[in-house]
Length: 194
Image (cartoon, rainbow, N blue to C red):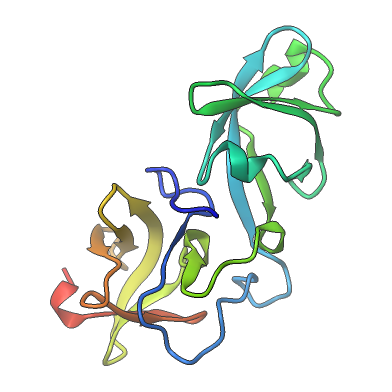
């Protein structure tokens, strides 16, 4: 079972749920237009060797979370082979990449899957990606900003919030700070506003 995202806050990491409202789980479609949210799992950092393999930076849950997926980026990349590099990353071969030149062209490509392709969660868990871009309001409904990242530095999950003026601040994802969240908004305690 997944536990936490990378320190970058990217990827589908899982956390414990703060108190929730009775509203349904977040809809994978952030726009409500039926398009499913894509969740980044890895990024290509460069070529590995001369036969078309690439080095991957793993986001979120790492190698074990990436291994079950065979197609990425709406099916444009098909995984043929994947191995752990022993350094916290991975080496991959894609059917569409046959040499080092093609592999180098993938540098910087983020490998994403639809939210529905992620494993189901146990009761009381959520994917960090479910919080990204949620509007943040106070209990009185005053707009505070939006969730721009979820981090975990070891003690607890941290929600990074971007205010309307572009400044950011961090709040621990604990009941005293985050009263509740649902598919429409995250409710921040007044004492934790900047």
